Image (cartoon, rainbow, N blue to C red; front, side):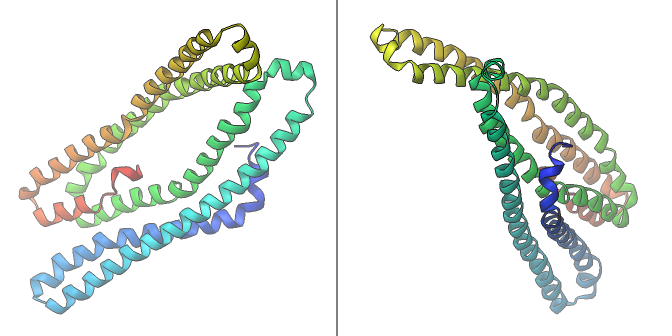
Length: 279
């Protein structure tokens, strides 16, 4: 990220504005369970039918505002990350064009093409996701914990104790998948090299009747890339199901423990917890 700071700095104000909009959207999203608590605790027991519609309208307003702000912020993050990636790709191409023949042979053309395409695309996705989830996920997580503790501290602690287990899953997935993605990048360079050689030497391949040989060569390296990508995808896919399983076990524990305390409080505490998609 240190090398990217020079490219990010010109768009620092724009990115801060994007994150500010994300922060406002996250706060509005957290207000939805809080308004639900008011309806269940105060309005319904008092028989205030009109107030139910009033607070329900406020919940719809918060939900709609959250949706609108998230759409705006996501579009802004796409614009800033796209412009940053454009500048990186331009400078990278300029640097590659000034390499000597020996330096290019050491780097290889296939690796240079991968750096210009897939690597810059990954940077684009990284910058966009940091802007989209870098503010929203922590605010929803910490805000949800604070709201649960305010509603029912004892029952909320059941869910808070689930956090180390979720963090352990994330650590395991990251520790295991990063080397696989690094390996995948190397195999991707091989695929690009085989494709480039086939395109460059297509006439020779046809003249020497090497079409089937080149097909088999490509199939082998393509299958290698597929296998590595599948292993990395399977491991990365553990995060959401694993977090959902642990979270649902915690919610089950809250419901089971609810009758000893306050069942409505347990339900409200559970509803204020952010969804697993934000973890």
